Amino acid sequence: MDMNESIFESFEAYLEGADYPKGKKKIMQAAVDLISTKGYNGTSTLQIAEHAGLSQATLFKYFQTKDELLTAILHPILPSLLGNFLDQLLNFQTTEEKIHYFVYDRMNYLKTNQALLKIVLQEMFSNEKIKQEQEHIWSFIQGRIGDLLQELKADPRINPDLTISQFLRILIGPLLAYFGQLYILGTNGQVTDEDLSLVEKQILGGLWK
Image (tube, rainbow, N blue to C red; front, top):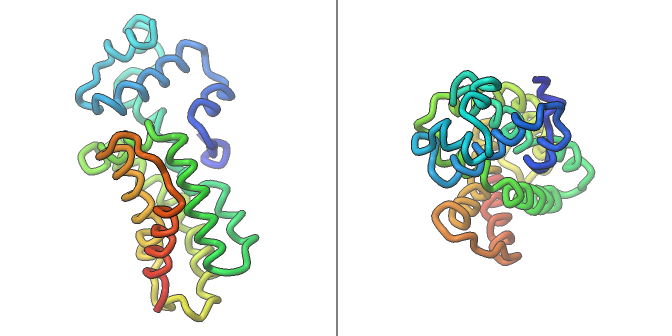
């Protein structure tokens, strides 16, 4: 799959527009529904097929293994986490404006795709497939993140010694922590402007000298 063609804002919209057989789409959606609630190891291919209203044989027609199914689900989601919106950041003048846009835009994205993000966050330290996808997406976004960092370093308040890896942790860490608090550890809590403002301050605090 061409990474540039896989950018999307919701998994449902991605499936709707994908040139896949109807049965394959049902299986992919069923896998997201179950794995996000039961975990990868707690979900069997039989359960996924039954949830999709199809036979296990039909599932194996499209995906030879559960790992292959997981890869098909994750391959489009990870590039989209830092997708085309990066280009929009360059339209804002100040660092504060860029970070404000980043926090609100990506939180909306995370909330819209919370089932998929639950899978990523719950499995990222133990599932080899997800580790491989993380390496895959890092190779895709590293250059673009580097360009954004250089743009921000034009602001004399930004720490000039920040590396790309440090910048990415500062940028994404507080947002993912907030998402996890609401939708993984919590019970679908309400996103508030007050909380998002605090996330912005945490990110900016990490960027300043």
